Amino acid sequence: EDRPSLGRSILDEAYANSCYEEPGKGNDPWRKYGTSLDLFVGSFLHSGERANDKPTDNDRKRTAAHLSGSMQQQIGAMPIVKKSTFELLSAMCDTEEVSRKAIEADRKGSQQTIAATASLHASKQAAEKRAVTVLLTIRDSAFQRDDVQTRRSAVEAAVSIASGSMNASKSCEDKALKLVMNVLFTKSTALADLVVGAAISELKKASDFAVEKYDSIQEDNAKSNAKENSFGGPKGAFAPSSEAERLAMDKLRKPVFLFMALCIRRPDIIKELFRISAVPKADALSKTVRQNMAKLARAVATKHGAATLAMQVSDETSQDEIPLLLTFLEHLTPVGEKNMPSQELIDACFEIQEKKSRDGKKDPRFLIPIVCSMKRDELVKKLPEFVQADDDVFVAALMKMGERLSRHQLLFRDEPESDDDALQLKGLTLCEQLVYLHKMDFKAAGVPQKRYLDALRLCLENEEVFNDGLIMSSLDHMSGKFLTSEEKLPLAYMRTVILVCSKHESLHSWICHTLLPRLVEGKIYTDKRLWEGWMRCAKMLESNAGSGVSSIEAINQLPKEQFDIYRARYPPTNIK
Image (tube, rainbow, N blue to C red; front, side):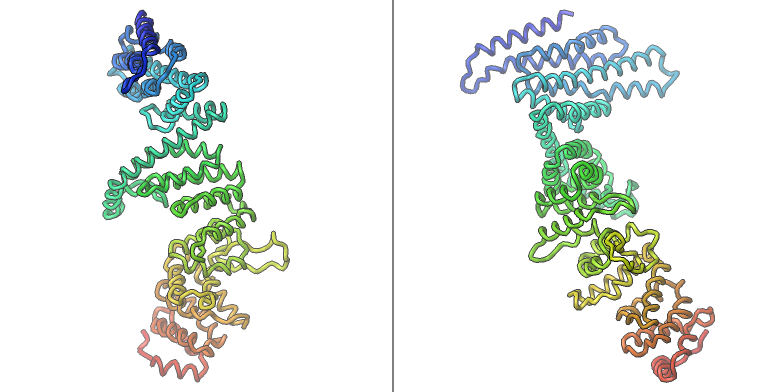
């Protein structure tokens, strides 16, 4: 019972000596006070540790309870509080060990005596109570101290606990997060500025950690990639590729969550989130931020407006931060088939694309978030830009165009008769994508022929999306327009049909009995290049008569002149 008063007496004596000691060269007059203060605060920490080590010792528990009960008042009465004081106090928030012992006691059941189990649970509750007292002490120091440095140190301690920088239990981290966001940040502008400054400091520590782990993560990722399916973690665009990366991202997630929560209150600091996350070799941090960007983007869009935030954030984003900006823009768009991006957000994305252009080249990635809500005729004009982009960008754009048209993917929709903007067709179904890609005048659009044909090949190779039914629907639409003389067949049409013959055996019957005869009826042989393609396709399918699927009927429907040309090119063989 006398220890606190004795310790306080020593501390007061050290403070008095420090007040009268004159500073000299290399001499810190507050050294004695600082050392005495650390020892005094350390007694709170030590008493708690001793109580946790031996839960059945009543003397230890009583001493720890007495000291922690007076801690808030004792710290509040100190004339000066150092940064080290809050660091020592924060160590009392680590209750994981005593919690683990209590859980093990429950699991062992009868192997532990009832009294021992009860003591462990009581010790756990006492440790959690001490941790709460620490948070209250930090709160009081942030509120009541006049010295800015002391208030800053208190805020930094709370933010460190909330961001997982200090060793603290999960429950204590959650309480610290509530203290930071709901109490300190809302108390005053000055405290809010201190919270933001401390959060930026924690995010920088996270960035340094990611850079430090970069080499080991890359090495582990390479090993995981070499062994197929060796890492059984979650899959996705921003999912960890190895165990090392998963562990790093788990550690980085807490400071990212804290900073994102602050960004919702102060969207002007999103630029700091992007700047720190884009540091070279901080890939794990960048990945963690992008993995959780949806929560941030949708929250700030609801509170501050999507279009306004899109322009504000893009204006403050450098070239190195473009991947983060693209992820942010992607998640600004509302979710659901009926919730289309607003026209203001569409205009903002076009303006951002214009501002971020380099050497006159516009980056089509800035339009991907809003292509699902663009008018179909406007989107068709933009197709060449996406075709010329990288394969990943091109495919992502196609998927986004039809994202909210899942019930109409096999259809080519008719244009409405009304000029009302609300009734205009938006986006492109998968069927429409294939049709308009075939109809594209790639030469006029400045698209190299090889790149144009590669784009069509990418679609056909993605058999999960562009399946048999979808391809048949697209080819059927174009051939139907050709038969009624409404439109000419695209030059790449027969090339696609030949590729389909190689990859989609289930469509052979439809091609032989429906498509090829229809093209003959439409006089495809009047176009030399398309006629060459028709003959090649017919030849590929001619020798399958034995299976009931053969192009022989379509061949026999050719006019005599064209039939003779075909047979001169491809003489009849023994048909099996």
